[in-house]
Amino acid sequence: MTGNHLCQLASDFQGGIPAGGILGEMKIDGWRMLYFRGRDGQPRLWTRGGMPIEGAAHILYRCRLLESAAGQPLFIDGEYQVDGSLAATKAWCERGWRQGGDRGLFHAFDCLTYIEWLDGVSERPQHARKAMLKDMVAQVEQDASLAWEWREGSHGRDGEESPLIVTPDFWLFDAGDVLDMAHRVWADGGEGLMLKDADAPYMRNRNASWLKVKHENAHKWGMAA
Image (cartoon, one colour):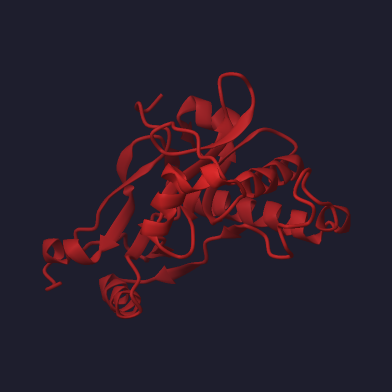
């Protein structure tokens, strides 16, 4: 075990990136959402602090379909967002779900086997894990029998769009690319960027393989906010 965390956590970007570049993703302003099986063996959605997330059965169902495609228990990591904002997500998770129904989208960005997660580390590199996640999502979306199957109790209310979205990624070659992309995101009202070492393993701790680029931390790397 690499630490007491349930998931990998990011360090603050300080201005430097590996030679050859780094993988980038838009930072979603929501709640961290984790899919894995609890001590009772039942799959659930959790916060990074280990609290169950309610009111998202449509997402849980989709995660279980991905697990079926993989043929083994999974750990799926991502960000949960309701109505496009942190405030709406927080309100739903804390009390809104009690009114009934399911809401929100799961922006999944990483995946490993449940056994790897229990070990606390996956030696498979970031790019291979992301490729596995994309492949499983594609398998589920292309399976006609699954596409037409309603989630039990939903009566078709889930609609045609999947509530699980693989977070798009792009390649940033140097610090200049990072600065340029960060400015674009902030100009559009976004929170920032996630930078990930494409060759690094997944470790259940806070480390420099993942870096967060946020507007309020811009002074740390010599750029005015």
